[in-house]
Image 1 (cartoon, rainbow, N blue to C red):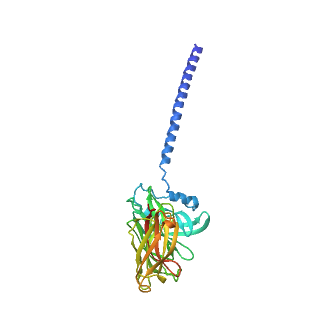
Image 2 (cartoon, rainbow, N blue to C red):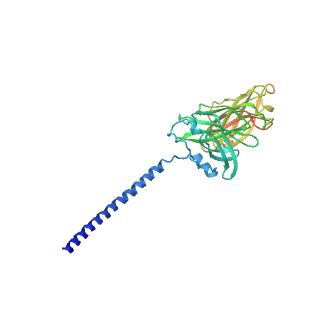
Image 3 (cartoon, rainbow, N blue to C red):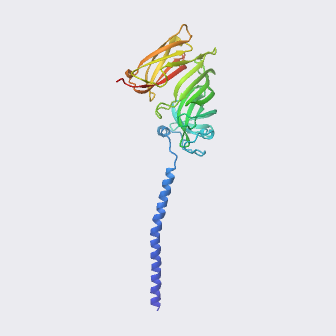
Length: 347
């Protein structure tokens, strides 16, 4: 009887262990599959980085670029807010160095880059402009940013696009050293800047010359750190406005191998010569030369006419042409207008 009882007990124990082993074989793969699915879902929720930011970080990145934002991301397609703009990650070409850093409540203090540990102080102006810059009907932003330097603060305008709920750097424009921002706005996809800059006779002095400038996104996204500088005016000491206006052709026409550009100036330039510059779509300079101005007297209003053989310059597709009045003292822009053309070969 003992032998029979022991055998029965052993058989029962064996059946229990067999059942537990089979249960473990079923449960363990199920748990593993759940982890894999959760990991995949978490990875897919990572906010993508814009192409411009990715390429810049590969070149040089400050030690602060890894600092996460403490501001929650916006839903994709939502307009930017002041809080997000003042805590944005900024990437661009500043003071001849590609920098990438995160603002904290509108400021940054830290190394210029991984290769340059010298400290840079960045401050964002209280004036922030909101509006659509890329035609997606979502508000982007433009900020004015100063970088402290021994020779004076460097003033930049930076465009920020709303991408996947985050502000993404889309280009910058250098206004000048020791310049003072007066106003900033976004109208019809362009950034309008009003500032006061030092005069050409004393570029390191106090800001005394009022200017206005218009900027927009580059022709080809990600090909250039600079915003497209489309026009500029300035005031003389007497309060007269230097302005160049291209009157022909209309904006954005298709032209053949030769382009005719006409316009006028409110004040004739030094030696009655303006300067034209031709850029391709990636903002590579293709040609530069003089533009004679016809004016009845020195400093009087005048007109100009320019014929460009664009195919002879190796230009096809989209090109960007500027007409500028440059200072004889330091080469700075006194006035400028521009036009975008579409070039095609005849026949």
